[in-house]
Image 1 (cartoon, rainbow, N blue to C red):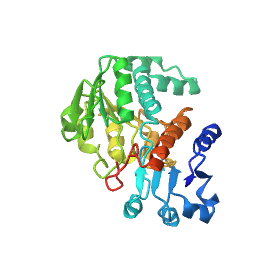
Image 2: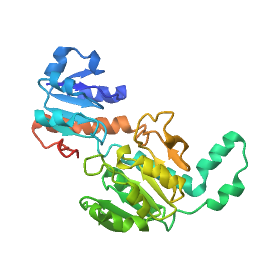
Image 3: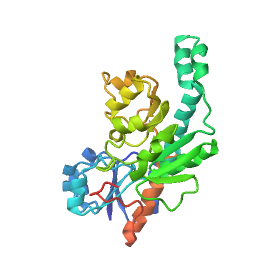
Image 4: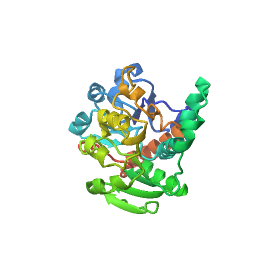
Length: 317
């Protein structure tokens, strides 16, 4: 069997993968560096991105494993039309992304982000920043999307003494870290109760534009919004307006509408925004976690077992 790996992994993890599957011929590198014969013969692809043209060239392809949890950047129509198996990296990035949201909340609560900026300018801002500080303990966090990222965030927020409300399309089996569950269809009922709202969702036709002007107006005045899913979950123009008018106190955005963010994008100058440039999933442990997941699924694929993290290309999740 032949498999193609185009994502970047630590060499030690690649070596371990190759040693674990002596019956597999691995072709490793950028797509453009892989010979046509290897493309045509590979049955499995482990990637960050792939084009419809590459999928067409991979005549023996049966299964694509995407390293990221989100698959909206893949040619889902082409994958669906070929009847290919599709799996994602759900679970490999839960801890670092959840900790990014915690860091953002703590920054807003302590004023840390403002003090760091002031330090660079040698400006004494204590009189204006200190009165705005608040404590997370006792505040309410609404987590929309209770997959691995959302569940990890709920658990960590409970450790800070926050009241945690969870929302998703379907109630997950494990809700120990959620004090109240509300389906997404009733999201409008709980938005006004939360001091902090975190979006931990994939981008699908059902979630695109989930938070627009109307829902921003429903949020508690002075609340904070965090997006660690995809930029298109939020109407960014409406968000900037809400921040400028003072309806929201701040926003922590790991995902934005345009990435990289252009120099002229108004989000750069929006008041009280923390931009982390879609780096929330970065971690020194990512390569190991991603390799372990692919390795388990490769074993399953070769032995005819159901794959972990299966994604329906038609629905996008």
